[in-house]
Image 1 (spheres, rainbow, N blue to C red):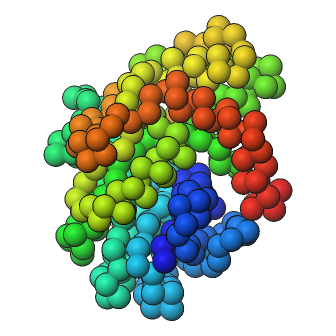
Image 2 (cartoon, rainbow, N blue to C red; image 1 turned 30 degrees about the vertical axis):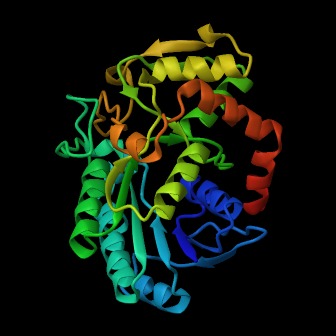
Length: 306
């Protein structure tokens, strides 16, 4: 059985569907926003409480724990560093300890934000030099995971996809939502990344689990591009003019926390393991649209009760 934390979030919810589709028995864990999946059990747990992780894993006895739950709002983390530490580091450490105590394998989902954005593309062995509290706590979560479970799997990524959350859409959802309302969309010309569709990420992650891999792997898109160009590609895929996306700069934004400017991830290691290339942006956005056309977003929203 696989236990997935953070199933009310973008990654956790989509990963649970992916795991079900691959025939796994799955238990999903959420903290505040209840989720109800047709073929999986879900439980509420506040993993920031000292005994929550141990109680949860002792009662469920999973073979795998995939830790997706995290405080991911970069500005919120900057404003609430102690709370970010509790969620991204302390809860991670306790969950890793609990996994070790029952002999479960452990997967920690990390981010390209552990890098400073000055020297990419980044490989797995490049030093972490985060520029904000979010990145610092995720990097510390990696260190806590390795300290408690050296044989764990740590996967860094940058995902987009359908979340079904109006209050917290992914980048692609936000871009599309603005376009659908007839608004112009700003896109950062000075921020470069390697995005991957969350559904593609989930399929690859489950394949890594099947292979019993350990260590750090980067699972990202095969194409590096600016957020400006990414937003243009989203617009084009859904039939909107690319000039509806306006060039903007990170320096001209009202974001409070500093952001790394260029965080493309090298994926040589995972490509060697898989024996194939990872999806590029065109492939990802094609599947992104196809999923909505097939009713996937409605299915996801139904799990949220709306």
